[in-house]
Image (cartoon, rainbow, N blue to C red; front, side, top):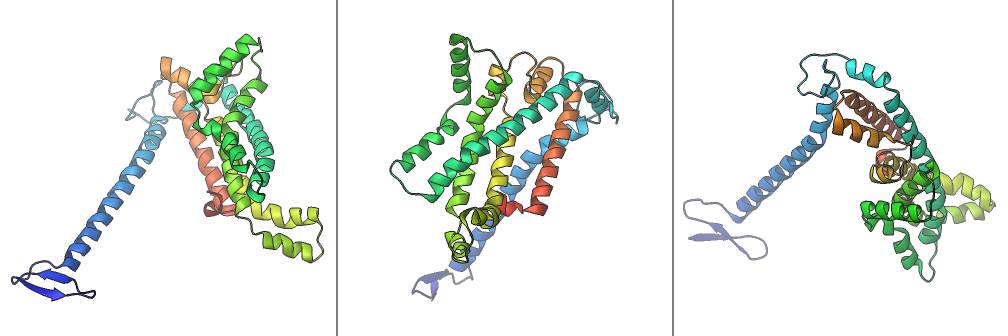
Length: 289
């Protein structure tokens, strides 16, 4: 057995017959790790994209029920969606609830994030942890507890109650984004603005808010998405005439497999992609996510 010395004094394992060296094993290990990483990325992307492709192709089936692969191509699913007032009303109601939830979540998370991210005071960490608590609580248990509470208090089922439950779920996510945005804000820019004679409100309008725009945009999108896709709270707390789109899709898929749900799913995905493109063109995803 012969050996060669590498920097650092370690003997490189080289056999008389020209066997692999330590550097050769390292290159092989790195190549294997890189290949495994790429395979995992491809599998993860396939797991995300494949269900979407199934829904997209199924939405152009010529049958009245969900089928894949489609036996023929048609737009009957989109016609059935447009002719179904229940689905259209559920979509409209979900958009309204999501919009109101987004505004309320930002209104609650904004001041809290400003205090937590910009100031140091006694109990700051405890308050932050308490406000983030809904993320850790099982949504199903919270929904059941709220149902029991409103039944005991004889509170009528009202859209405001549904919005409040969505705000309860969405606000911690908005708070998490905004706290990071406030904490990462360079206060030297605000001090420079003040030293140049700008008043507090003018500094807030021209310096602080533009710098926080990506954070608020991210929090707004995240709050709306959390509300729009929330099915547990909606299933337990929605009253008559307050069916959201996820609940309506769940009911249709559970009983009839109507092909119209594939059409509305494709429409929702397309709108989400449009939002992503707009955010990328206006602000940049790397500044928002």
